[in-house]
Length: 556
Image (cartoon, rainbow, N blue to C red; front, side):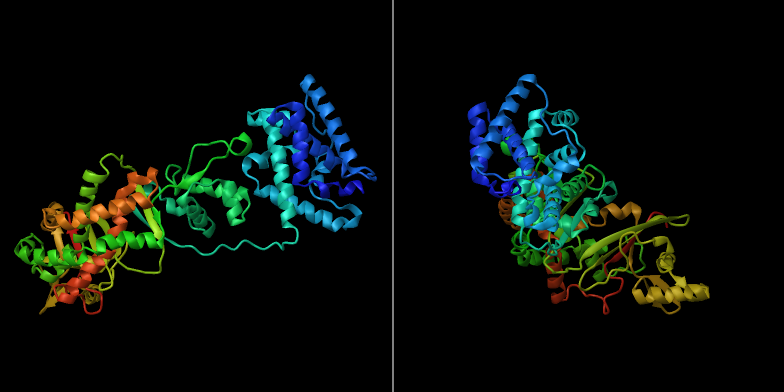
């Protein structure tokens, strides 16, 4: 046979025999791998020379014995034994060249495959391959650079060469296709101050989302992720590190676990795991169903409560000329599910998670795989400051019955309609307005900020002073004084069992976020549905009005 055909017979069976030969002479597994790597190197070198082989196995074992003789001598001299020629000449030998039989094009294609597979190696293996074959460094020099032993470098070279050879063989006959990842979307909520660092900012690509998902149920190495996604390991490593660092370098969507030992005792590059509560659709359904089972009882309790506390609600010192019971209810009902959830959280903390240290940070996230259901429910608050009213705030809720007037980051200072609402608290005569102000007033009437009586305008949205703001929901907080205890106990017990099943042990300190996910926003939507159906709450006719919008002023 031709020497160029040597690589064809270098299968797993031969490699096992070579390793047995090496181990019998060295008596040490690490030295056996090192010697075996040198023998393979010499065989690859021989495969790139001209000539015939009459006795194949005699030729193979002659190279093996000669390599062992050199290995033993060099070991005694404690010197390096590596190819000293041009790395660019030896590197193509890693490809399975078939010489004249298959032609130069096939050889170049195999070499391209080798380069491709190097990109799929993890950092530890990829670096030694590049430093040895492309930069021409000896194993001793690489060991100094990486602060490890010469033996460890040789082991990595040997393992990397075998992996590349195996992967290139598998690639034969497979047409290269671009990587197309199936779309995966998350609904991720934030809690706290996102200015500290929002990790969602670095998870905008499908590639990132898939990596997060792979880390969800078990820790994973960059090599495992690269293999599953069929994406070069160099990109996986970079993306996992970006996801780990997040926006501020302190809080990311994944965490890196302590480094361990990989195959053959080689130092691993670390495993990555999920760093925030993330659930699939079925898990979220089960979490929410725990609260939803108690919604009928919760709605009955709320109905009785608001009727019993009607006079207390109306006695709050709003600055408005008139106090609209419907507007007050829309404002207060919005907070009632959170009172329920806090009762559940108190029981969870006292009975089930007393031994768990809770995580404290300025901002945290939690979420689930988006299921296509859009609740459209939320609450936003914006603030402004001027010389007349000092610091003033406007809040509004939005849901399937009420459209939002504004959202976060809205520039309140530019809203002339709301400024007119402030001026109209004690009444504003129409004939005192300029033509421009009359246009603003017309829009304010249309969106519900003002109402008109004769030739006077009055503020319709609820307004209170800043000094009274802390007691705005004082009556509603009374729901926690025993009314919800039985429902909360039932929810807490079932929720604890689900949290323990669904959440990794190291994330149990974030159980409060899971509680929030379980009740938001399904409990509020169910409560609003019930109260609207009973006629206790009356939504605005066209979805936009004073309902669900209120203001706080510092001075008046």
